[in-house]
Length: 175
Image (cartoon, rainbow, N blue to C red; front, side, top):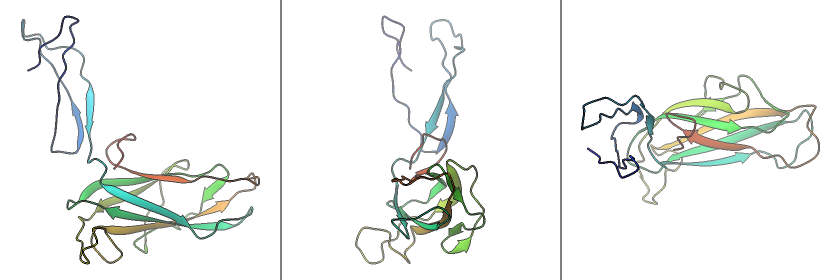
């Protein structure tokens, strides 16, 4: 229950232990009328994953294929799901169909083209076997995503930026 201020605005905090989308409803306590506005709220998992991205070359020319590797590290003791990695690839770079691998195994090609959207599924909970506080290769909570991009004919000599982010229930829900 929230009380409105003189301007008719009610302020409060809502929380959920369940990741996903919820629709809020409100009832006017004085007359029992359900308000027509029903905003959606996105409950996310917070900043739980660390991504580290690398490429196999610093310089390339038109027609070259660049191999990318994204290390996905869970920083928590909870399974993180659903996970999608969105990669905003540079203009004139194209995804090489069939090149996506998750932990070395073939996976479905990403949806879209700018950004590429890779469906990772679940990232296991961190089990820090060596006690260094990080998910390392071979430990639960560590995964790799690899894929290739080819540099298209429209690319001109300059620096290109390629950015990836992990998301869950919405495009603005970074994890």
